[in-house]
Length: 180
Image 1 (cartoon, rainbow, N blue to C red):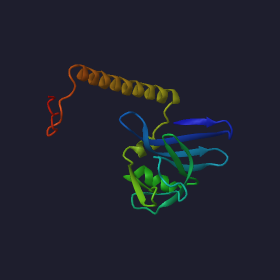
Image 2 (spheres, rainbow, N blue to C red):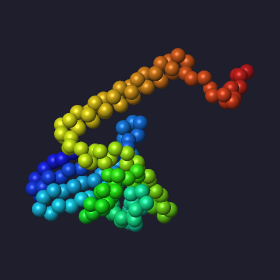
Image 3 (cartoon, rainbow, N blue to C red):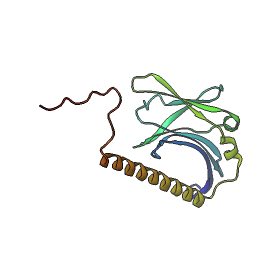
Image 4 (cartoon, rainbow, N blue to C red):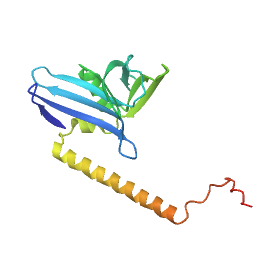
């Protein structure tokens, strides 16, 4: 998707690979931003889950390439953004042709955790024509409506199950003792 950054009078295009939960909540995302204008640059940005150490930042590598460092920029209730500025064309080229990005972070006890993000389809999306922001908005609205419909259907089935006497106890669950 591309858009105009009025503040810098530059066009910004980005390609993203998002992963969401069954409820449609963002879990992890990888994006490449390309700023076109007087000072062109490429930025790789990640949306990572909460509960990770901010200070050491992140490291990421495409397949078996050398890792690049990145820093957290901001956090929201659903996750934190980390990014690497000034990414060279060879890194983006590796992402276009690669199989996965490995993002290394540290958890609350200082242990390294690595998220592996598949890059299937990323090159095709990056090389393809930009999607119109209105089309993207419509697609996201349809997806949100579908997730809400699934959630409502599941809620109705659970309510019907409970109204019909609930669910039987799981195998091996002891029955309550009879009352005297």
